[in-house]
Image 1 (cartoon, chains in turn green, yellow):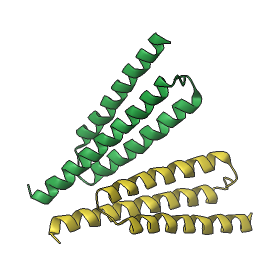
Image 2 (tube, rainbow over the protein chains, first blue to last red):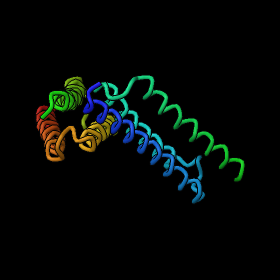
Image 3 (cartoon, rainbow over the protein chains, first blue to last red):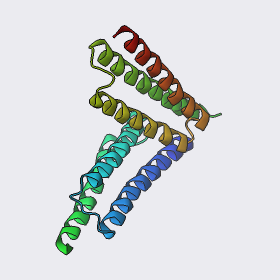
Image 4 (tube, rainbow over the protein chains, first blue to last red):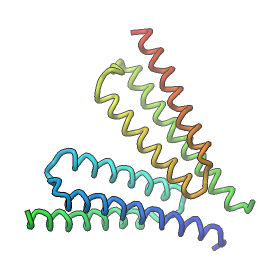
Length: 93
Length: 93
């Protein structure tokens, strides 16, 4: 595969992973600061961020920078980690 | 510039333009079907779509697929065209 193609793909993957981690950090901060996960504003922020990321992933898939399965896995992983955070927060509250 | 780089850039530009046109079409359909532009749901749909497009554009800029100025121009153009649609709709209502 030509070098430049690989660079764009690696770069796209790195950006998407970084964005997913940013969402996770944002939610961690919210939970650590005792904002309730039941709060509608919290859910709205999370929905907006997840929508933004899914649009980026979709764009990368359409550009053939990542595979559809990779994009799906990235979102599913993030959702799994968010669920773990939620459960921890509910147990300790 | 290597051929592959140009392909990714052209493809990214084409995708973003197509997405902007899709928003414009969506709004045209809403106006033609007499859904009031003052309707909160209409504004929410538009906001969501604009946010999604801006995230795609931002992603393309960060990947160096388009210039920051290009991305800005694309959004500004879309906003201008949406304003024209709104004004027309208000005059004829």
